[in-house]
Image (cartoon, rainbow, N blue to C red; front, top):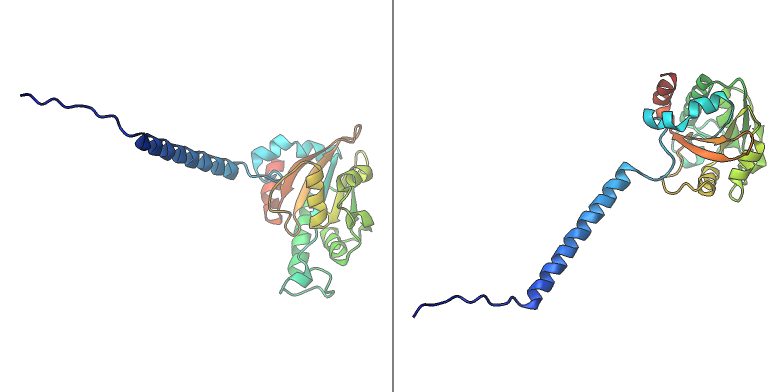
Length: 225
């Protein structure tokens, strides 16, 4: 008698296992894609040392028109470093003063003929401003007490046709970014600079991006291009 093979139905448990395995695999792929997207498009201010980003930001034209406010964090703090200090414990280090000088040179290369410089009244910010430009800057309490209305204060102190350089603190820069809707990022490092445009008519503000001290040479090269 011939023997006929019979296809038996697979148990439902097997189908459920396959479905669960497929769901896990798809979730892993989605997570990997999400991480890859985050790595390619990190949060926080745009990197203005990148040529394409810099061109799209319009920084060069805005600076020439005097429509920019730039917030610079003070140099390396003496009380949080093992490096040699300038003298005062609440001031900056020698390395911090050299970096501040480099950042000041970068801003002067962009043009400071119609720029106003303001600083927080604390020692570390006043020293940073001095090494940036070789002269004392006007101290302003709002550049220290800044968490509630930093963005509004920047707009209020920005004079039409004059760029505004503000030497301030990390919490002030963080506050402005938050008020401007910028999320994430690692926060401003010592002597980093955040560039913001302020419309001379409406007062509307827009964060263009940021540059770290080591990125100034690259950014200036793109600005000249």
